[in-house]
Image (cartoon, rainbow, N blue to C red; front, side, top):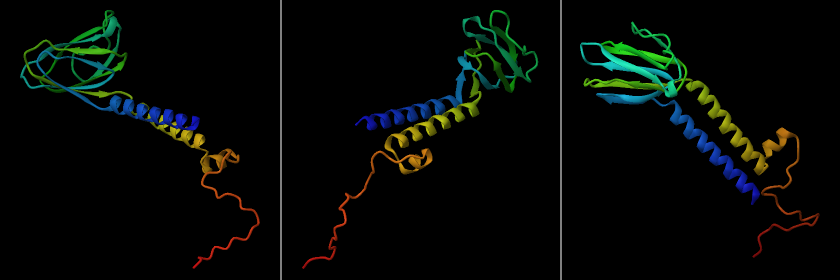
Length: 179
């Protein structure tokens, strides 16, 4: 019965890690006027349909500083000491990346409907963590269930033999059907 609990814990870990990784690497979209959303870290693609630039602000949580990378003219490379960065969002599609820091919020106080897509940073690292978690959970389940391949890999005999026939000794058994 103890082995069943170990397998159940491994399954729960595997499902939890998969859910976390899938949720972490998917893109999130926002649209509307007066946008205020959490960027975290990663790349933000903004679409400004108006013909004029719109003032926007990035603010770090708890006034923490952060660094930016962008091709938008006038975007500062890093936040101020108070953890904010202000710039004008040009018309059309623009992109900027939070390269250092986390928990950064995007704030645009405007009546213009903007569209934003936030792409998580380091998705490759998160996928690698997911793969390690899933493989670890599968290894743990196989070790608990004493599968043959794991016993061969570890060079030991299984403590119990699954699906084995009882030892009938050296008796001759007649396996012919009786009439």
